Amino acid sequence: IGASLFASNIGSGHFVGLAGTGAAAGIATGGFEWNALVLVVVLGWLFVPIYIKAGVVTMPEYLRKRFGGKRIQCYLSVLSLLLYIFTKIS
Image (cartoon, rainbow, N blue to C red; front, side, top):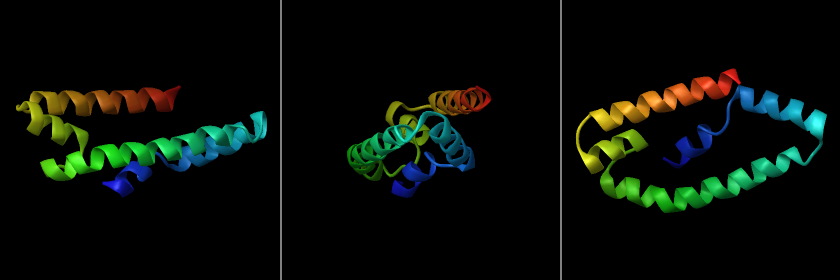
């Protein structure tokens, strides 16, 4: 779960984009990533015990167990995919 938190925040587009933004705007761009690192660790400390106690790995899986039914799991999965696509396009 912890590795998933960090891996979902980093990709090839992430490195290329940060390098370009850093070249254009300066080193202050890195401040966003340092803040993100701290917040990912804090969120990990908050949510990992809940996920382990529930016996789940992903947020859609947790919502399915918490609220019942497959519909909310599918809805969140589709919403996450759409948001990922739109953020990569923009």
